[in-house]
Length: 239
Image 1 (cartoon, rainbow, N blue to C red):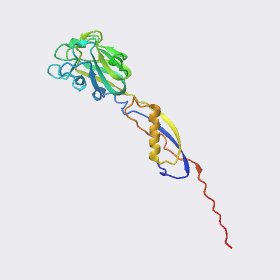
Image 2: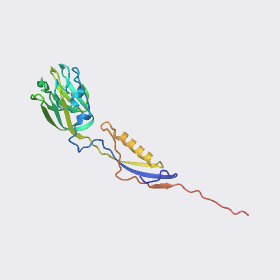
Image 3: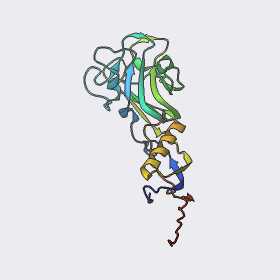
Image 4: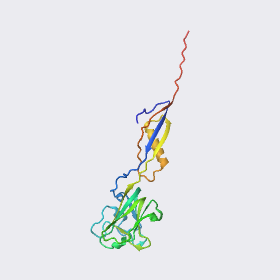
């Protein structure tokens, strides 16, 4: 922004146009979003914690290696927090390879922003309606359902919930907002930029985005709206 830092006695009209967008790239469809998230589950069976289902390892030799397992309980669930809002295109689940492959049957995939009932009341994308072979991987299209939380839920049954890998693919929520702001001031350029960004954040709220990028569609320009009047000098000849 090329203008003087300060000029006393002048008022300026700053016409600022900002674009608000989030950090993610909406073009990258191959990134497994689950790897950036955090997982929790209704309970944990020994050492098989929720994070094991998003470690990027579909299968490894050994007893339920790199899998998550809950206790044998009623309505077990597993939840992934993507840390941001995304449009989910598909969800891929890998079953354990050593034994008990039937435990994945009936799992509901739910996507949304609510944590009501631990997120299990969010809209349903799909149900694992048929048995998945030991070590098998299945994918479900979710049609761009929006949300921050991905739940694996086994309702109305008492059992263990076992997941060896959950992968989530989608696009980042990207919103562009153009804002025009008028400032009549003699403040410096940095202060104008900070004021604009602060007002943009306050006006729009940033609960659904992880980062804010401010860019100009038109460089700020200054318009002199008034000038300080110069004092009039009077001179008199001495006699």
